[in-house]
Image 1: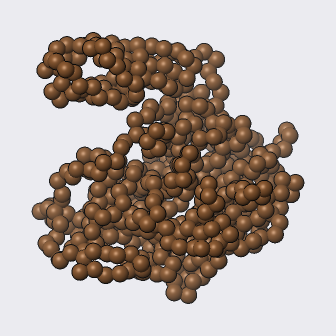
Image 2: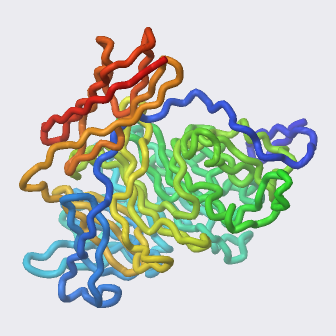
Image 3: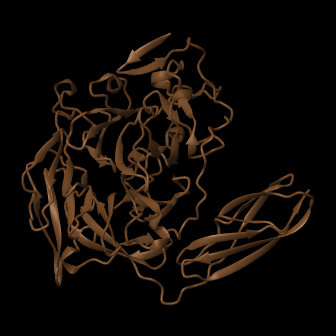
Amino acid sequence: MTIQICGTLLVLAACSEAPVRPTDEISLAIPSAVVASPPAASVAATVQVPASMRTSPFHVTRSLTVPPNFSIAVYTRISKPRFLAVMPNGNLLVSQPSTGKILLVRPAAGGDPLISSFATGLRKPHDIVFHTIGATTYIYVGESHRISRYVYNPASLTAGARQDVVTGLPDASSPELNGSYGHELKNLALDANNALYVSIASTCNACTSDTQSNPVRGAIYKYNADGTGGRLFARGIRNAEGLAFGPGTNDLWVAVNNRDNIAYPFNDGSGNYGKVVPSYVDNHPPEEFTRVRDGGDYGWPFCNPNPDSQSGYDNMPFDLDYQFNAAGTVNCAAMDRITKGIQAHSAPLGLTFLHGTNFPSAYRSGAVIGLHGSWNRTVKTGYKVIHFPWDDVSHLPGNQIDLVSGWLSGNSSWGRPVDIAVDAQGGMFISDDQSGTIYRLSYAAATTDQPPVPRFTHTCTGRTCTFDARTSTDDVGITRYVWRFGDDSGAEGAVVTHTYSAAGTYRVLLKVTDTAGQVKSRVKHVTVQ
């Protein structure tokens, strides 16, 4: 039989025995990204702090871990800063939900940046997005109960007249919520066709009431840029904080906070079925970095992505949620797979694509996400900025690396990153709402570039071998991997597969080129049967 819930058709199967742990599934035919990672955070850098800003936590020396040739400094101190936007004139806007303000931060010659109120009297303003339509550039602001916009005027230090775009969005003031809304802050994005997308996050950790509300919560809605024509775009997305469009596409990508305290879903004889087991909760379900399609359903709260299958964090299959879908009445196989998982409880917030910025070239084809950090994991995780290199052919993320880490020391933290923005000079601003800080991450090219170090591993099944060069290293980044397989054939890429026509021992050559043009090679002899 079927039932209709808020416009979504759910297929109900007959009740069955409690689910047992599934064997590995054959994943859907979705390509994986094959792209080299730039150098990850590996160098302890002392945070540079102006004398006027050395109050806690900077009353003592602090260090953060950054990639080679990077430095990091405190740019300014602001209480509980959240989302960031660099203005066309180079100034910085910072949302401050706790005060109802958008703050303007301007550089001052020879002194600390100047901070003033750009917009006031707002209700928990969060995301800030610049978008140009025709000859007019607008500043869109997500408040808890509405989306508003202002006409950008480079000569003005204040926002000017507010235009209400979308009103009546649910927040804690909505009568049916009785003052309680766990994720009422709003995030948004606009696409190349001037469509507006708004994340209406869940009110709860996990509940079915959000799936039946009007508007649906745990969802993304799409509007015209002026707020007309609103409709449900995608659902099953618990709390999408970062929204951004993939470079050169109209593909919406989101960074999602997934649920907490999940019950063990497998009736596998372990005695844990239906129990909240910390060792399982620690790693399940993963946070999400995923592409969102029109009409998609991403599982919450009925289906949870499983990182334990053969595909790992890529294109994850779903497990039945014990609390809301133990009998499998909601078909998890019909849900849209999550493109890329992130360690559970990391709390991803701001999402920024670096394409088109002046950030260092080795990282520019990539996306960065601020991980706010865990509150309910036995060993804390997150508290860093991560980078996903981007495959510009498949339009998919590669393997995650740390870009900035070190706010977490042992099981305690002194800072929690939120959002990221890049200025015209290529510096990266990072907001931290725990310490009340905006940092600036800067790159200075090494005076003497070191040559790359090529390395590779291989695995062969019969005469088909996979070669993996992602362990190669360089101080500025590798841009090209060229292979010669010893049988008059070759390929390019960090990870390649080759099938030999005959058994034998072959001389395999890997040649890597770094961003400075230096080339180094490595040879191995590979035997196939």
